[in-house]
Length: 313
Image (cartoon, rainbow, N blue to C red; front, side, top):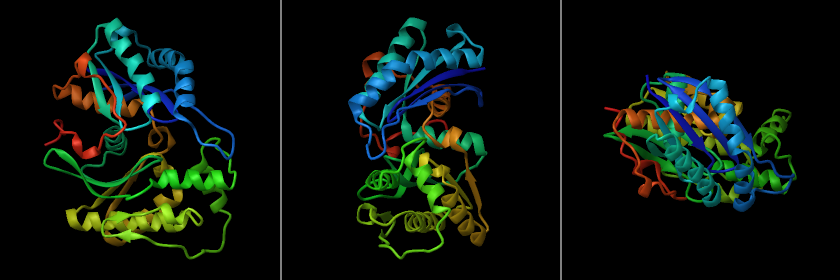
């Protein structure tokens, strides 16, 4: 059996998870929450992560019932993400790797979301809608790469929702997107908004004054186009915004009309977490990949399609 511990801290979540051959042994997480109307700055977020990361590490090992000697590989988020938080987590992962004498492995954050979604839902070869605070992409696997078929040309859908929440002072606890969803459930009138789909790409910057229903309609449209192009009969929604039940409902309607299946996870695995980095690290490690210490840097820009997927046919 192969056991991998994963460190995630690319934004305001700090999580450490442990995976053993497809089983999630532990997955504790902390969130840096700011007052209503405020976002989270990289330096403040990194300070939060530094303050709690060793506590979260201890929790992960205790919940899994494991000791450092039981770990086979240490995986960490290489990028993309916010620079200061990424550095903080990478530093701890490098230190742990050396103290425990275990191989180190840098993981693409987006790949982590995809592989965690595939593990939990058992989706075979889905068209993936990856929606979060920093990313909006429609992805499909082909020839050892996760190919990006469409993406935002300006801001990510999660960032759009977060900024809208800040403008009208919606609480950041537990997250702006969740609170917008709860308020939207009480609405009864649809307001027609700017709808900007450009081929396979979308634009959200001009819609900040309006919001949720139209954003999701645009995402469903470009996902359906990618499905048609790939001949796919599965959709997997990953990323923090993927928790939104209205987005899942709208995507489900489209899938039903096409005779396709929808796969999604709940907040345990949609929202950034350590187990997703552990799972992607597990796949990579089993296929022979490791990261040498001198190559264990981080990068704020690390596209999904830059990674060679050596663990899939």
